[in-house]
Length: 137
Image (cartoon, rainbow, N blue to C red; front, side, top):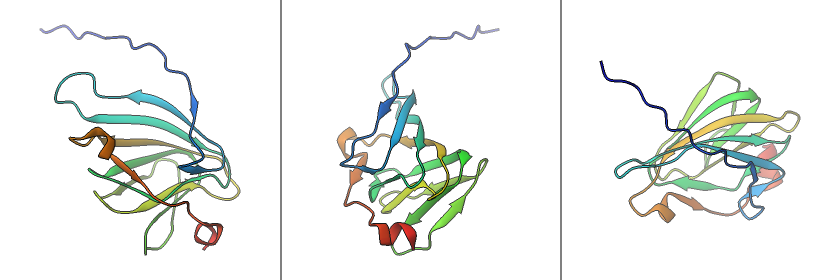
């Protein structure tokens, strides 16, 4: 029987996400990233204060969000805003412009999962901020 090995990764400090890409207070804890040739998976725990949200953005290879705490708001450009709760998983297809964040009155935490693009800087394309009107609509 093959023995399972564990490669302990050093703890990476929590970082506050940049205001150029987020509105409000948002913190990120990396969980997994590519470690060997051919790997693409990136996973992070992201925590949003009430009212905090991403800017509009898209992902070259799509993104999966798994809500772990609080109330999430997620919207694709031109679509209806969706409210999601702990235990729910949402998927945004490749290239689809969207935003996600906490509801106005609740903290929210999700696991963000995506694959890096062949050209890593093209993995996420950041766009303009979500306006208060868009957020509250």
